[in-house]
Image 1 (cartoon, rainbow, N blue to C red):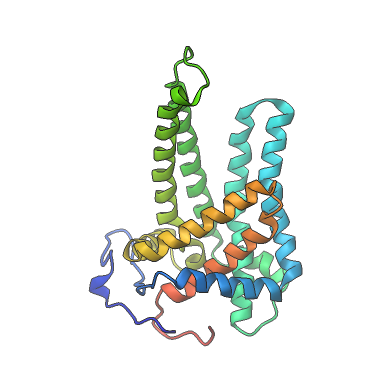
Image 2: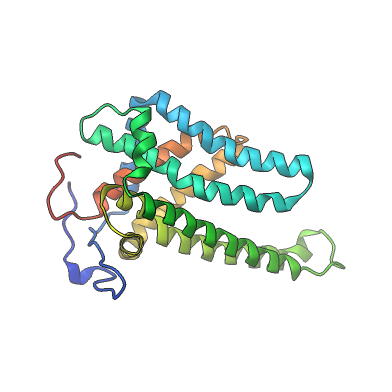
Length: 264
């Protein structure tokens, strides 16, 4: 590793009354591109597993869109997104396991990847529920913003602009909070037998300390999501596993260990 260990007093969170915080390293702005390169290497080494899990990431948004178009009932988005938030951590855990197995010099298998979520099951499912609650809160806020739109206004851009700006700003703030809470939470829960609060606070600490590098990483994820939507969700088949693999490598590089790992 080229990065130097950061002394604990320089961490954003040095103490917490509700959980311990695992120290992190200081990252360079270019590090996320290195994670992406390592993730792409894993993608090439496990093409079948990549496509298998990638199809699920593509099917979920497609299914939500299909149900809305079929029923004309936009409220179907809520239960569909609830399911996604609960299934998402399971899919991510499987991808992390693949990169982890490569790092240990093992050959990843579908069964081993599927069992990954069981390593810290209570806290990992708790993480899924946390994401679900945050998602429901955001949907309620979005509904309130929509309710503020007067029915007598037209559909032209000039009249819509204030509400579009408000929705974008609120959405960006909410997305930033979710990213802060979840950037490294799932990998921490997978590799270490820690509680959810420890994993979340460790993620917050790492993101806050490395705001520049993590902003670059967030933009990479954003671009991947945009490409996925522009390709009719087909792009998600490869892009989401790529982001998953890269996230694992980012976690390995960012979060410290008491004893150096025997891989990576």
